[in-house]
Length: 131
Image 1 (cartoon, rainbow, N blue to C red):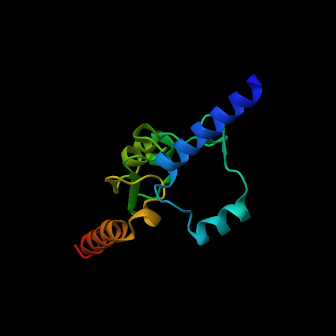
Image 2 (image 1 turned 120 degrees about the horizontal axis):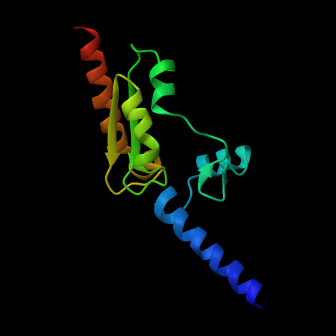
């Protein structure tokens, strides 16, 4: 039936989206399966967390000025540049890094690269605190 075909197409599109933008691995790691089983469905319709929004102005007013932040996203992340821009622009000590070839779960896809970026950022934060 047409409804079955539409559902099948939607399922295939969702699978492609997940494989491209959420987790670029052949299988889901056990720790992630466990986390998903505890949290339930988090994403709805427009591929965004329902009801979540923050502005650059809100971040400037609310984020403690002395607290640095590392803003990470994968090159293929479903969280696009427009969604992270308020954090990058609104947090005084924000540093942004895009992880090439990775998606939303970059820490699971390429731990070595992820840890390298994180370690470098932590070292820079530590060095700047000593000034």
